[in-house]
Structure formats: structure tokens, C-alpha cells
Length: 310
Image: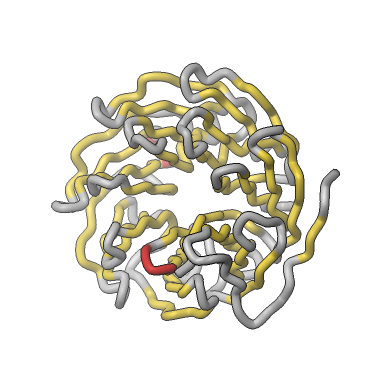
């Protein structure tokens, strides 16, 4: 039976046990970051950040980084303490964000500038930039330092060598690519294409699309289960989470969630879906593929991330 849990408005976050992962929720309308307690539907707290956060990325040492395209800012947060470390202005319309393995650099897609910026995580200073396609949205960084960029209005994914800040290739995908997810082995990249209603599957070694899986509607968020066997896609138009087999794209479940779902995050046994128009996060049990809870959060949740407690 579905449960509805109201997020408490506390002064600090409520981190879980050491080594546990919390789920963090960026709410664009409210301008907040919410912590959901690890392994539970119990809510943590919210932290007021700069206006209209769009995307959220975790870094090492419990850090979290949020982009604010409307105000051209980035907020750095200590996730374990629930404290803002700094908010700095950046020279572009910051949207997608990824953090280097050592936590010293941020890679940020500049939506209006059609480029990816490399910034100092400490100061926000611009350290380099590379041109990509039109309206770069989601980005993801692999363990080798290769960055993939969803060029929303160019129907492609740009591939960037971050060591030299050089674009080394482009890969055609569907219409309006927005969100990206790597499988655990990092040999497959999944691309949610909003306007063509499908997911492109990229072989990261060959840097080419090898399959296209039909989802229908408007795929906005994408994630992969820890075993790499399933792909989870939020269908914004239908208000569902679609579960596909990674091997063949066969749909094994279509789970009703809230209105206009976007970001998806996955833990060992659960998936979390940000319901933009319902001001909630759906919790999906990955064994039964059913919504087991819907957690109320501040206005306009769009992006989710897993963060490691200190």
C-alpha cells in the first residue's frame, strides 16, 4: 500500500550510517536540496540553495554540486552536514554537471554557449572549455576521464577527452537527447531521447550507437541497476517508470509514478523517481517493480543523486 511521507523542515541533514548512501533531491521551484534517509522512506531535511537548481552531481568526501542555469551559478554543499560551502558565479548557463574522481574539477555543460566548461571545484574559476553541439544537457564522466555530453538540439552525443579538453568524436542518437547513464562496466552508455521516445545504446569502446530501444512518450531520465541487467527510464508524458532489459530492450514493467517524472536514481534494492509536477519522489521496489512509497518534497523536484555519507 502506498505511503505518503512529508519531508521534515529541519536545520541540518540526517546522514545515515557510515558508508551508507543517501538520496538527494534538487527541487527547482523551491530552490532546495532534500536528503532522503539511506535505505528507508524516512525523510531527512531540506537546505535552501540558490534559485532554480537544475542538475545535481555528487563528488568525493560527501560533496554535492548543483547548477543554476537561470542565475549562472553553482552551489557546493557538504552533504553530510547539510551546509552550503560556497555559491559562485560561472561564465555560462550552467546545466549538466559532473565531478572529477579527485573532486578538484567540475565539468559543466553551458546550455546557451554550446560548450563544456572545466571549472575549479574550489573557486569556480574557468580552467578550460571545449565546443560541443547545440544546447548541451546531461553529461557523464567515466572512470577513464572520458566525458559524454547529450547535445539536445544536435541529435548527438559529444565525446570529450577531459585531459586535453578536446572533443574526440560525436555519436548520432535519437531526437532531443537529454539524460545519460553508464552501466557498471562502462562499456554501454544509455541515452534518453525525449522527442523520439526511445533510448540509444552506445558501445563506448567503438563510440557508436549499436541499438535503439523503444520506450514511447517522453523519456527524460535514465539509470541502470547495479547489476547492469536493467535500464530504468522515466516517461514524462505518461507518468511512468519503464523497466527494460539491457540485453534486448524488452519492457518488463511499466510502473505508474507521479506527474512529469524526470530524474531517476538507483540503489541496490530500490529506484527513486523525481516527480516534477507532483512535488514528490516515488520509491520503487526493484524486486516487485511496484511503487512502495511516495515522499512529498518541496516544489518542483527534477534531479536526483546518490551521495556517500562521511
